[in-house]
Image 1: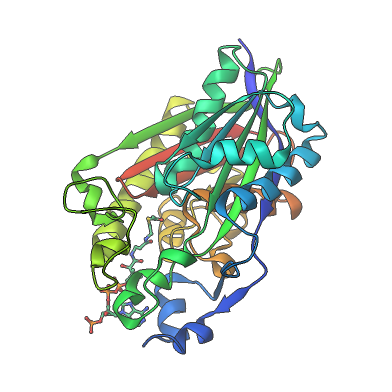
Image 2: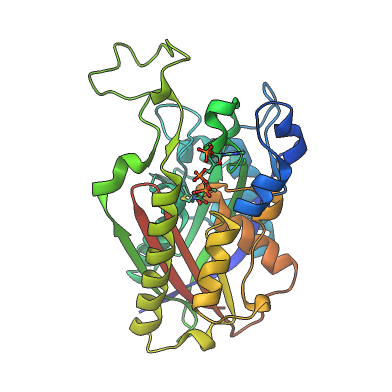
Length: 336
Ligand code: ACO
């Protein structure tokens, strides 16, 4: 059986930097509050009316990943695109990215939701397709635009200060090298808490008379809702569980991890996990300080930066882990 290996990484973030001080002008918040609770100093927001869309940012990140992989666009056999903020209600962004990248082949494009865990879910799907021999080269993308949908008033401050826009992508390819690439992936969900971190509208449920019309700006169902404390408590528990599951499956221990890239939910969550796992700072990669929480984009965006910074060398053990809305949580153990 083939193994699947990441052979190229890429990312893209919009140019517009929104600092905590900029948010202070829009709502009752402070740089000190945001930094103390989340670690975030600034995030990127797209230019309203500009060229960036979720699919287009994913396309830019993909171009970089494809270039770094040293392959051509048409070497890609399949696309997996994870996002909770698609350009359109339908079709999903996978086909838009396919068009924008200029594919000559009619490759399949799969859209994945799964919010903050979306990238690892996508990576797991790609890994299975490669291991079964169905595809040789798969592009996995995570891209998000949160800025257009947030409540940027004091009413929404508990959520809006956390999230940012960005994109990341990886190219995965089949390899005959044993014990290289993706060793295992682990996926979980718990629909019991679906509403604890959610955006209910627009939807097709019967309370929306016509989802095409965004009718009432006062209707809170059109803004993301987060039960922050409850999410925090579940996140720290599930992160540890799912990392433990990956290590146990591969009969490894935490000290064998060379680099942990947690979904960039909140620096306090990452630091909590780091402490529980007794990992030194150099073994954990965080960039939430610069980008905020970019949900499905956060892991590939961090991975691409970690690679550029030389934080991974051949043979290193990389652990990816995520928790988010759904609730969903996931991990992947990768021999680099
Ligand atoms: N600026 C200033 N004050 C604020 C802000 C803000 N941006 N947001 C909330 N507050 C106020 C609240 O109104 C509250 O005021 P009150 O005491 O007068 O009622 C006070 O600060 C404390 O609010 P809490 O919600 O209890 O603050 P907490 O310490 O729990 O921090 C936070 C909130 C940061 C959201 C925290 O719960 C958290 O980190 N949760 C996890 C969030 C997260 O990581 N989500 C993403 C993970 S999943 C995913 O990625 C999709």
